[in-house]
Amino acid sequence: MTSPKITPIPPSEGAATGPRLVQSLGLFSSTAIVIGSMIGSGIFIVDADIARGTNSPALFLGAWVVTAVLTMIAALSYGELAAMMPRAGGQYVYLRESLGPLWGFLYGWTLFLVIQTGTIAAVCVAFGKFLGVFFPSVSTTHWLWHIAHVPALKVGPMVLGNMEIGVSTANLTAIAIVFFLAIVNIFGVKLGAMIQNVFTTAKAFSLAALVLLAFTVGRNAAAWDANFGAGWSQFWKNAGWSSLHPVQVGMGGPMVLVNLAVILAVVQVGSLFSADAWNNITFTAGEVKNPKRNIPLSLILGTGFVLTVYFLASLAYLLVLPMHGDPNGTTVLARGIQYAAEDRVGTAALEQIFHSGGAWLMAGAILVSTFGCANGMTLAGARVYYAMSGDGLFFKSVGKLHPRYKTPVAGLMVQACWTALLCVSGSYSQLLDYIIFAVLVFYILTIVGLFVLRFKRPDAPRPYKALGYPVLPAIYLLLAAWICVVLLRYKPQYTWPGLVLVLLGIPVYLLWSRHSKGQAEGESPLI
Image (cartoon, rainbow, N blue to C red; front, side, top):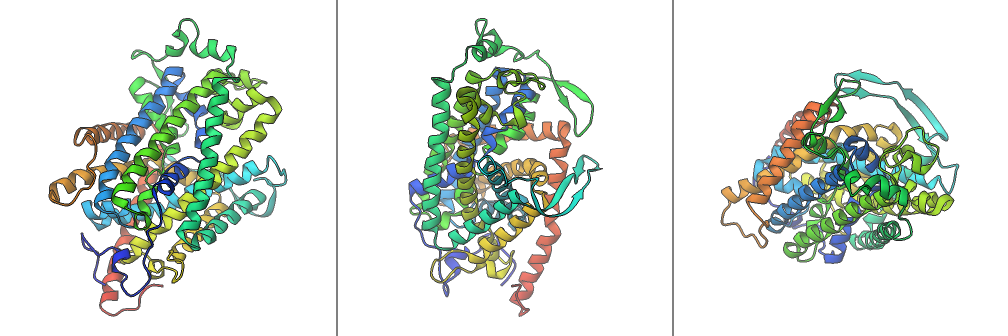
């Protein structure tokens, strides 16, 4: 096989002598993958950090509006690329076709190394932690095999280490879920999609119930007065253009005062990451029925639903809990949203409504949410490595499908093994912190690719064209670039480490490309 070209034959189309991917996902299943991959545990936690950063109910909700605008524009733009190139691999393919194979590989490399596997590890460990509410023996501190403690070490903007390596009952539960979902998804995309449909429906009802409760029986007079009182002056407090907000530069750096535009960009670290993974449906494009219609529709419907629910959930928190709080408070109301215990705002809200039973209800909701999220990401991620293998940029065996179930068995298992290693190492949380910036950069590059393909291939069939092109994609690029600049300046611990991880993929790409060329000349293929 020669080194990848700009327009190679997609693996799903080129495997004439072997099994091919089966188009069996309809619109509902595709939308369920979008929704299920987006909703994990973030919406129940990140609002505490956003509240501390913004220090204003108006800006608190404004952060989610910025996230919604960015994500919806991106989804509308990706819809054009998905309809134009309905192939397994999704965003990897879009980057490869528009900017070249190196950029596609760097995305796939980062996806495998951290983005997909790290997120699966994080949500599966979260599953284990919340399972501990029902079974106290399941805990991150209940060690079955404690290998080592790695002390904190500051390297430039990074703080490495400060983690425990070993097998606890919580991460053992996570590892069991990781391999269970990998094995389940081997037995056909229909089975994986069925599980996704069930759990996505359950988590949608859970979030809807939380919102409904907060807007009815959960409304709290003290919270209303604190967040919306005095003729709504409390709502707009600290939200003016002249208001300044403290931000700590880096890890242990100086505190500086920034304006509204900067603080809204800084807090996107939490809200954008909670709304991420909406693009996972593009990875499975080779298995979607009528993909030129259903993928753009599922992107729009799925992201629209989740972003609406996220905004309403954050508004619900404001109806139940005061935004401002005391970190030393002894009650849920006293701690408020800003200082909810362990940042578990969702749990605090339900505890305020139901008192002792609230923690159990929220734990159950998060178990459903994290399981469905892990399943959707497990199903989707393996399709990217499958596409990379077809281009000679990943292990050859990962490009093969199960002869009966037509699923990428090796891709699913390789993904599961690396995810399990991240669970044991305890490094997934740090890696996810480091990669948030890189994820945003890849979104920017993909939308740049939309403009490039409009120029390079003006006559290519486009069953769906990005709504609002070129204005809306240009707005996305400006807003996202501003967020990147702000994060580079004020949150270097979330930026430079991620860029380093991405750049490490360049020598790996050169190695794979050289091997791919050697394979075409008769050398032994990588397994």
